[in-house]
Image (cartoon, rainbow, N blue to C red; front, top):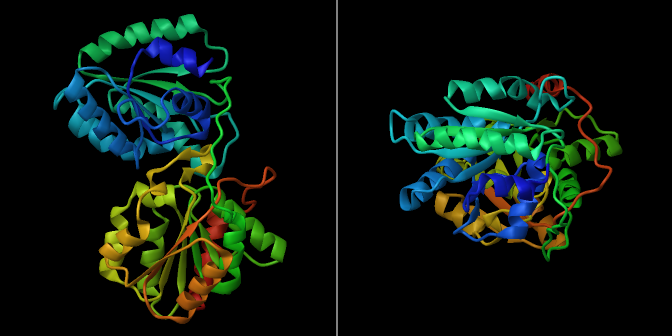
Length: 373
Protein backbone atom coordinates (compact mmCIF):
# COMPACT_ATOMS: atom_id res chain seq x y z
CA UNK A 1 0.00 0.00 0.00
CA UNK A 2 1.21 3.49 -0.74
CA UNK A 3 2.13 5.38 2.44
CA UNK A 4 0.76 8.64 1.08
CA UNK A 5 -2.61 6.98 0.50
CA UNK A 6 -2.55 5.61 4.06
CA UNK A 7 -2.09 9.10 5.49
CA UNK A 8 -4.92 10.39 3.29
CA UNK A 9 -7.26 7.69 4.62
CA UNK A 10 -6.25 8.48 8.20
CA UNK A 11 -6.86 12.18 7.64
CA UNK A 12 -4.72 13.48 10.53
CA UNK A 13 -2.51 16.55 10.40
CA UNK A 14 -0.16 15.75 13.29
CA UNK A 15 2.32 12.88 13.52
CA UNK A 16 4.99 12.13 16.07
CA UNK A 17 7.14 9.03 16.35
CA UNK A 18 10.43 7.20 16.48
CA UNK A 19 11.52 6.00 13.02
CA UNK A 20 11.48 2.33 12.09
CA UNK A 21 12.87 0.54 9.04
CA UNK A 22 9.55 -1.27 8.62
CA UNK A 23 7.89 2.14 8.40
CA UNK A 24 10.51 3.79 6.22
CA UNK A 25 7.99 4.50 3.46
CA UNK A 26 5.73 6.27 5.96
CA UNK A 27 8.66 8.19 7.47
CA UNK A 28 9.89 9.25 4.03
CA UNK A 29 6.38 10.39 3.14
CA UNK A 30 6.13 12.47 6.31
CA UNK A 31 9.55 14.01 5.70
CA UNK A 32 8.59 14.73 2.09
CA UNK A 33 5.29 16.28 3.16
CA UNK A 34 6.19 18.12 6.37
CA UNK A 35 9.91 17.81 6.99
CA UNK A 36 10.41 18.62 10.66
CA UNK A 37 7.61 21.13 11.20
CA UNK A 38 6.70 20.92 14.92
CA UNK A 39 3.13 21.90 14.11
CA UNK A 40 2.70 18.73 12.06
CA UNK A 41 5.60 16.30 12.55
CA UNK A 42 7.96 15.67 15.47
CA UNK A 43 10.54 12.89 15.69
CA UNK A 44 10.65 12.40 19.43
CA UNK A 45 13.26 10.91 21.78
CA UNK A 46 11.26 7.80 22.68
CA UNK A 47 7.83 6.31 22.14
CA UNK A 48 6.48 7.26 25.56
CA UNK A 49 7.36 10.88 24.84
CA UNK A 50 5.57 10.56 21.51
CA UNK A 51 2.37 9.55 23.28
CA UNK A 52 2.68 12.48 25.69
CA UNK A 53 3.39 15.00 22.90
CA UNK A 54 0.41 13.64 20.98
CA UNK A 55 -1.74 13.94 24.11
CA UNK A 56 -0.77 17.60 24.37
CA UNK A 57 -1.73 18.10 20.74
CA UNK A 58 -5.15 16.56 21.42
CA UNK A 59 -5.70 18.69 24.54
CA UNK A 60 -4.91 21.84 22.55
CA UNK A 61 -6.86 21.02 19.39
CA UNK A 62 -9.41 18.30 20.14
CA UNK A 63 -8.12 16.44 17.07
CA UNK A 64 -6.79 12.88 16.96
CA UNK A 65 -2.99 12.61 16.62
CA UNK A 66 -0.95 9.75 15.15
CA UNK A 67 2.06 8.07 16.81
CA UNK A 68 4.34 5.83 14.73
CA UNK A 69 6.92 3.40 16.08
CA UNK A 70 8.56 0.00 15.81
CA UNK A 71 6.88 -2.63 17.97
CA UNK A 72 9.99 -2.64 20.18
CA UNK A 73 8.75 0.75 21.37
CA UNK A 74 5.62 -0.74 22.90
CA UNK A 75 7.51 -1.11 26.17
CA UNK A 76 8.18 2.63 26.31
CA UNK A 77 4.59 3.50 25.49
CA UNK A 78 2.82 1.23 28.00
CA UNK A 79 2.97 3.72 30.88
CA UNK A 80 1.35 6.71 29.13
CA UNK A 81 -1.17 4.46 27.40
CA UNK A 82 -2.32 2.85 30.63
CA UNK A 83 -2.04 5.79 33.05
CA UNK A 84 -2.67 8.84 30.85
CA UNK A 85 -4.60 7.94 27.69
CA UNK A 86 -6.80 5.18 29.08
CA UNK A 87 -10.55 5.80 29.09
CA UNK A 88 -10.66 5.45 32.90
CA UNK A 89 -8.11 8.22 33.27
CA UNK A 90 -8.24 11.04 30.66
CA UNK A 91 -9.77 9.15 27.71
CA UNK A 92 -7.41 10.63 25.13
CA UNK A 93 -7.90 9.18 21.63
CA UNK A 94 -4.81 8.29 19.63
CA UNK A 95 -3.98 6.32 16.51
CA UNK A 96 -0.79 4.25 16.49
CA UNK A 97 1.08 2.95 13.46
CA UNK A 98 3.29 0.06 14.55
CA UNK A 99 5.98 -1.65 12.49
CA UNK A 100 5.80 -5.39 13.15
CA UNK A 101 9.34 -6.73 13.52
CA UNK A 102 9.71 -10.38 14.49
CA UNK A 103 6.32 -11.40 13.14
CA UNK A 104 5.85 -15.14 13.73
CA UNK A 105 6.82 -17.10 10.63
CA UNK A 106 8.96 -14.27 9.22
CA UNK A 107 12.74 -14.54 9.67
CA UNK A 108 14.16 -11.75 11.80
CA UNK A 109 16.96 -11.00 14.25
CA UNK A 110 16.91 -12.60 17.75
CA UNK A 111 16.07 -9.35 19.56
CA UNK A 112 12.82 -9.05 17.60
CA UNK A 113 11.47 -12.59 17.96
CA UNK A 114 9.76 -12.44 21.36
CA UNK A 115 8.56 -8.88 20.83
CA UNK A 116 7.04 -9.99 17.54
CA UNK A 117 5.20 -12.85 19.21
CA UNK A 118 3.52 -10.58 21.78
CA UNK A 119 2.89 -7.49 19.64
CA UNK A 120 -0.81 -8.01 18.98
CA UNK A 121 -1.45 -9.31 22.50
CA UNK A 122 0.20 -6.25 24.06
CA UNK A 123 -2.10 -4.02 22.04
CA UNK A 124 -5.08 -6.11 23.12
CA UNK A 125 -3.99 -6.01 26.77
CA UNK A 126 -3.71 -2.21 26.58
CA UNK A 127 -7.22 -2.01 25.14
CA UNK A 128 -6.00 -0.87 21.73
CA UNK A 129 -7.98 -2.16 18.76
CA UNK A 130 -5.74 -3.21 15.86
CA UNK A 131 -5.84 -3.86 12.13
CA UNK A 132 -2.94 -5.55 10.31
CA UNK A 133 -1.81 -4.19 6.93
CA UNK A 134 0.20 -6.38 4.57
CA UNK A 135 1.30 -5.90 0.98
CA UNK A 136 -1.99 -7.30 -0.33
CA UNK A 137 -4.29 -5.19 1.86
CA UNK A 138 -6.54 -3.03 -0.31
CA UNK A 139 -7.25 0.65 0.11
CA UNK A 140 -10.90 -0.23 0.58
CA UNK A 141 -10.07 -2.55 3.48
CA UNK A 142 -7.98 0.14 5.18
CA UNK A 143 -10.71 2.72 4.59
CA UNK A 144 -13.25 0.43 6.23
CA UNK A 145 -10.91 -0.27 9.14
CA UNK A 146 -10.38 3.45 9.67
CA UNK A 147 -14.14 4.03 9.61
CA UNK A 148 -14.46 1.49 12.42
CA UNK A 149 -11.61 3.13 14.31
CA UNK A 150 -13.37 6.50 14.24
CA UNK A 151 -16.09 5.25 16.59
CA UNK A 152 -13.40 3.90 18.92
CA UNK A 153 -11.47 7.17 18.85
CA UNK A 154 -14.62 9.22 19.43
CA UNK A 155 -15.12 7.23 22.63
CA UNK A 156 -11.71 8.36 23.90
CA UNK A 157 -9.95 5.08 23.15
CA UNK A 158 -6.97 4.17 20.99
CA UNK A 159 -6.48 2.11 17.84
CA UNK A 160 -3.51 0.85 15.83
CA UNK A 161 -2.52 -0.09 12.31
CA UNK A 162 0.10 -2.84 12.52
CA UNK A 163 2.36 -2.87 9.48
CA UNK A 164 3.85 -6.10 8.16
CA UNK A 165 7.18 -6.26 6.33
CA UNK A 166 7.14 -4.57 2.89
CA UNK A 167 3.49 -3.58 3.31
CA UNK A 168 4.07 0.13 2.62
CA UNK A 169 5.68 1.88 -0.32
CA UNK A 170 6.50 5.47 -1.26
CA UNK A 171 7.46 6.66 -4.72
CA UNK A 172 9.47 9.77 -3.85
CA UNK A 173 13.14 9.41 -2.89
CA UNK A 174 14.19 11.27 0.25
CA UNK A 175 17.92 11.82 0.78
CA UNK A 176 19.37 12.08 4.28
CA UNK A 177 22.89 13.49 4.63
CA UNK A 178 25.05 15.88 6.63
CA UNK A 179 28.34 17.72 6.12
CA UNK A 180 30.60 15.52 8.24
CA UNK A 181 33.24 13.27 6.69
CA UNK A 182 34.20 10.58 9.20
CA UNK A 183 32.32 7.32 8.71
CA UNK A 184 31.02 5.47 11.75
CA UNK A 185 32.80 2.26 10.81
CA UNK A 186 36.19 3.96 10.59
CA UNK A 187 35.50 5.78 13.87
CA UNK A 188 34.83 2.42 15.52
CA UNK A 189 38.02 1.02 14.01
CA UNK A 190 40.00 3.82 15.70
CA UNK A 191 38.24 3.11 19.01
CA UNK A 192 39.09 -0.59 18.77
CA UNK A 193 42.76 0.20 18.15
CA UNK A 194 42.99 2.39 21.24
CA UNK A 195 40.78 0.35 23.57
CA UNK A 196 42.84 -2.79 22.97
CA UNK A 197 41.54 -5.55 25.23
CA UNK A 198 39.28 -3.26 27.28
CA UNK A 199 35.59 -4.28 27.35
CA UNK A 200 33.26 -2.38 25.03
CA UNK A 201 29.47 -2.07 25.32
CA UNK A 202 28.07 -1.06 21.92
CA UNK A 203 24.67 0.35 21.14
CA UNK A 204 21.78 -0.97 19.06
CA UNK A 205 21.92 -1.03 15.28
CA UNK A 206 24.69 -0.67 12.73
CA UNK A 207 27.32 0.33 15.30
CA UNK A 208 27.25 -3.14 16.86
CA UNK A 209 27.16 -4.76 13.42
CA UNK A 210 30.22 -2.78 12.36
CA UNK A 211 32.07 -3.58 15.58
CA UNK A 212 31.40 -7.28 15.04
CA UNK A 213 32.71 -7.17 11.47
CA UNK A 214 35.79 -5.16 12.48
CA UNK A 215 36.69 -7.93 14.96
CA UNK A 216 36.06 -10.57 12.31
CA UNK A 217 38.25 -8.82 9.73
CA UNK A 218 41.07 -8.45 12.28
CA UNK A 219 40.84 -12.11 13.33
CA UNK A 220 40.00 -11.07 16.88
CA UNK A 221 37.60 -12.77 19.25
CA UNK A 222 34.32 -11.19 20.31
CA UNK A 223 34.78 -11.68 24.03
CA UNK A 224 35.71 -8.02 24.50
CA UNK A 225 32.33 -6.74 23.31
CA UNK A 226 28.78 -6.73 24.60
CA UNK A 227 26.54 -6.02 21.63
CA UNK A 228 23.32 -4.34 22.80
CA UNK A 229 21.38 -5.63 19.81
CA UNK A 230 18.02 -4.58 21.29
CA UNK A 231 16.99 -2.37 24.21
CA UNK A 232 17.78 0.88 22.42
CA UNK A 233 19.08 3.64 24.65
CA UNK A 234 20.31 1.40 27.44
CA UNK A 235 23.91 0.60 26.45
CA UNK A 236 25.26 3.42 28.65
CA UNK A 237 23.38 2.02 31.66
CA UNK A 238 24.82 -1.43 30.99
CA UNK A 239 28.30 0.06 30.73
CA UNK A 240 27.77 1.98 33.98
CA UNK A 241 26.76 -1.20 35.80
CA UNK A 242 29.92 -2.94 34.58
CA UNK A 243 32.24 0.00 35.31
CA UNK A 244 31.03 0.33 38.90
CA UNK A 245 31.70 -3.35 39.59
CA UNK A 246 35.06 -3.39 37.76
CA UNK A 247 36.68 -0.16 39.03
CA UNK A 248 40.16 -1.22 37.90
CA UNK A 249 39.07 -1.89 34.31
CA UNK A 250 38.64 0.72 31.58
CA UNK A 251 35.12 0.30 30.17
CA UNK A 252 34.09 1.84 26.86
CA UNK A 253 30.50 2.62 25.87
CA UNK A 254 30.00 2.98 22.14
CA UNK A 255 26.76 4.97 21.85
CA UNK A 256 24.69 6.74 19.20
CA UNK A 257 22.91 10.08 19.25
CA UNK A 258 19.43 8.59 18.84
CA UNK A 259 20.12 6.07 21.59
CA UNK A 260 21.50 8.73 23.93
CA UNK A 261 18.43 10.90 23.38
CA UNK A 262 16.04 8.02 24.01
CA UNK A 263 16.96 7.80 27.70
CA UNK A 264 19.00 10.94 28.27
CA UNK A 265 18.31 10.92 32.01
CA UNK A 266 20.91 8.17 32.23
CA UNK A 267 23.61 10.79 31.61
CA UNK A 268 22.70 12.47 34.90
CA UNK A 269 22.89 9.13 36.71
CA UNK A 270 26.30 8.39 35.17
CA UNK A 271 27.54 11.88 36.05
CA UNK A 272 26.39 11.46 39.66
CA UNK A 273 28.08 8.05 39.97
CA UNK A 274 31.18 9.42 38.19
CA UNK A 275 33.06 6.16 37.56
CA UNK A 276 36.56 7.27 36.60
CA UNK A 277 37.04 4.16 34.44
CA UNK A 278 34.13 4.78 32.03
CA UNK A 279 34.61 6.32 28.57
CA UNK A 280 31.31 7.23 26.89
CA UNK A 281 31.77 7.72 23.13
CA UNK A 282 28.72 9.14 21.32
CA UNK A 283 28.88 8.86 17.52
CA UNK A 284 26.60 11.70 16.47
CA UNK A 285 25.45 11.82 12.86
CA UNK A 286 22.21 13.59 13.76
CA UNK A 287 20.18 10.73 12.36
CA UNK A 288 18.34 7.48 13.08
CA UNK A 289 20.60 6.07 10.38
CA UNK A 290 20.14 2.38 11.17
CA UNK A 291 16.44 2.57 10.31
CA UNK A 292 16.68 4.87 7.31
CA UNK A 293 18.40 8.16 8.14
CA UNK A 294 15.58 10.28 9.53
CA UNK A 295 16.93 13.16 11.65
CA UNK A 296 17.34 13.39 15.42
CA UNK A 297 17.45 16.62 17.42
CA UNK A 298 21.05 15.77 18.39
CA UNK A 299 22.14 17.62 15.26
CA UNK A 300 21.60 20.88 17.12
CA UNK A 301 21.84 19.76 20.76
CA UNK A 302 24.97 20.55 22.77
CA UNK A 303 25.78 17.03 23.94
CA UNK A 304 29.12 18.11 25.37
CA UNK A 305 27.44 20.83 27.41
CA UNK A 306 24.75 18.42 28.57
CA UNK A 307 27.38 15.94 29.74
CA UNK A 308 29.22 18.65 31.65
CA UNK A 309 25.98 19.77 33.28
CA UNK A 310 25.28 16.17 34.26
CA UNK A 311 28.62 15.91 36.07
CA UNK A 312 31.01 14.39 33.53
CA UNK A 313 34.37 15.89 34.56
CA UNK A 314 35.67 15.67 30.99
CA UNK A 315 33.58 16.15 27.88
CA UNK A 316 34.91 16.92 24.38
CA UNK A 317 33.69 17.16 20.79
CA UNK A 318 35.80 15.96 17.84
CA UNK A 319 35.34 16.30 14.09
CA UNK A 320 38.57 14.88 12.62
CA UNK A 321 40.47 11.64 13.04
CA UNK A 322 43.40 13.55 14.55
CA UNK A 323 41.12 15.03 17.20
CA UNK A 324 39.48 11.65 17.74
CA UNK A 325 42.78 9.82 18.31
CA UNK A 326 43.96 12.51 20.72
CA UNK A 327 40.73 12.28 22.72
CA UNK A 328 40.76 8.47 22.76
CA UNK A 329 44.39 8.24 23.89
CA UNK A 330 43.79 10.83 26.60
CA UNK A 331 40.75 8.91 27.88
CA UNK A 332 42.68 5.65 27.78
CA UNK A 333 45.54 7.07 29.84
CA UNK A 334 43.46 9.12 32.24
CA UNK A 335 41.29 8.37 35.23
CA UNK A 336 38.27 10.55 34.60
CA UNK A 337 34.72 9.82 33.51
CA UNK A 338 34.82 11.08 29.93
CA UNK A 339 32.33 11.75 27.15
CA UNK A 340 33.62 12.04 23.60
CA UNK A 341 31.11 13.29 21.02
CA UNK A 342 32.24 12.31 17.53
CA UNK A 343 30.62 14.08 14.59
CA UNK A 344 30.02 11.52 11.86
CA UNK A 345 28.65 11.21 8.35
CA UNK A 346 25.39 9.41 7.61
CA UNK A 347 25.79 6.11 5.81
CA UNK A 348 27.14 2.57 5.95
CA UNK A 349 28.42 -0.12 3.61
CA UNK A 350 25.67 -1.70 1.53
CA UNK A 351 27.11 -5.15 2.28
CA UNK A 352 27.26 -4.67 6.06
CA UNK A 353 26.42 -7.98 7.71
CA UNK A 354 24.95 -8.93 11.07
CA UNK A 355 26.51 -10.73 14.04
CA UNK A 356 26.75 -14.45 13.31
CA UNK A 357 26.99 -15.54 16.95
CA UNK A 358 23.90 -15.95 19.11
CA UNK A 359 23.25 -13.29 21.80
CA UNK A 360 23.58 -15.80 24.64
CA UNK A 361 26.94 -16.98 23.31
CA UNK A 362 28.03 -13.33 23.14
CA UNK A 363 26.92 -12.83 26.73
CA UNK A 364 28.66 -15.96 28.02
CA UNK A 365 32.00 -15.18 26.35
CA UNK A 366 31.83 -11.57 27.52
CA UNK A 367 31.11 -12.57 31.13
CA UNK A 368 33.88 -15.16 31.05
CA UNK A 369 36.30 -12.51 29.84
CA UNK A 370 35.21 -10.02 32.53
CA UNK A 371 36.02 -12.62 35.21
CA UNK A 372 39.64 -12.54 34.10
CA UNK A 373 39.96 -8.77 34.60
